[in-house]
Image 1 (cartoon, helix red, strand yellow):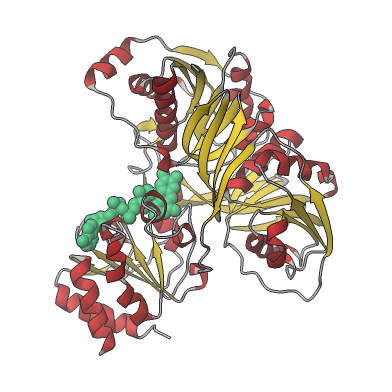
Image 2: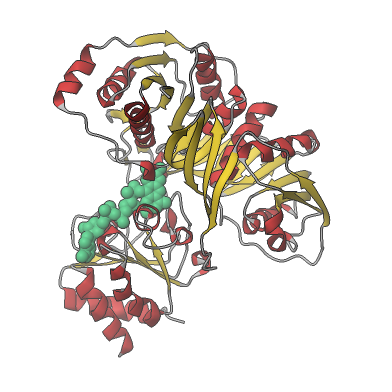
Length: 249
Length: 296
Ligand SMILES: Cc1cc2nc3c(=O)[nH]c(=O)nc-3n(C[C@H](O)[C@H](O)[C@H](O)COP(=O)(O)OP(=O)(O)OC[C@H]3O[C@@H](n4cnc5c(N)ncnc54)[C@H](O)[C@@H]3O)c2cc1C
């Protein structure tokens, strides 16, 4: 059956480009470009693949800022049909994020499945899927490495700590995906250009007062490695073997 | 204080209970299959959940266990554990402090330490959170002579259905306590090539581990050998990284190592910034040399 899919998209700073001050360990976030978060790309790819297979529609939601247009355009280029940006993102506070996004989802009629990444690459709390399931009182199929529709149900494969499972849940439901589920597409130039012209719906979040944690410190751990690098393989092996031998018990 | 501890992995319950039992009374919840791993955790009460477990019905069972009677709920950050923490947070309105690898409790506030920015920084937070997800392997479990009072609860039915389940052979490896670790990355190229690394593992009396792609994408090694932000946090005397580029998410799992050795054919690989000794070159040439020299 055709699927009405909602995909949750996070925009983050490009942490690969983020440096930390070598002296103080303070992260330098100023001037670092924004990008679509890694797992969100997997979620978009999974949503678009389902639409391509079964028909239907993909709606993207970003809880972000005025600067989130670029991320939504990228999502459009990948195949998202309609997009909502909710501005007012105050930083990492999963309970608040879950509140804002679940309120938005309640206004979308007749959706079948909400797809999101299982743990985002920057804050990495991993609790948003559960929070969303709790807020919307929907079944959660967590940590999917594959998704399909099966006569009115969603069926996923997943790896838990010590076992692999195939599980299903009736729709509507929530599915979180891991980065192993797919290789997100790189959209062709034509699609990127078309995406630039597509309208984006922007609205202001109605924030509620939820206490965020007090950050006491957020610093790069000191790395005091020796960094003795050998380009001479023979000499390097000799030296390294000596070091290792001293540690074998 | 009174604590509720849950994990779908018994070992993780014991890790957290060991840390908590000096601070107050611990009631541990786990799946029935995990009973043996929790019996010596020093819990006052052990509740075994019987039946097919999903994030939904386990959350329901926990919510029914009068959560308001506990000062804190600690849940191990496994795939299932994170989902459950989220659900009970939404249902109770209590905040979560997530992914803690260390914590202290003081005057109704909890201070937690966790990785942030993908592992580039360590964030220390003080929150009024009542739910804490704990990164597995953060605490050393120790056995307590006190046995818990046992109780079994049948899990409620659920809209989710289990269609198929396969246990992965748990090799029982515990790379978290290894003294020497030989860790392989995508540079190893194939599952078969791991045989060429085994002599080094033997010569060092080490344990084999790997990066996320090796363990999860290609499944050349089992998942329990994955090192990194989303895998195990290890602290061996020597960590030997072979064909691992050294992305921050990997480094976050091996930062506690005493000595880090890296072998990579790309001299600009970031792993060389995070090692004590590095050799630039083909790992398939270098590994036999190391083995030969170690045998001498
Ligand atoms: C949210 C999140 C969580 C993550 N968690 C983890 C985690 O827990 N653990 C983890 O490892 N990763 C994790 N990752 C993935 C991480 O970002 C990297 O993609 C991954 O660590 C790369 O693995 P690799 O070094 O094996 O592969 P690559 O980055 O592909 O590196 C392979 C290296 O091998 C070298 N090489 C190739 N052939 C040879 C040869 N013959 N001899 C010597 N060297 C050779 C290459 O020069 C290259 O440097 C996570 C990512 C995200 C977004």
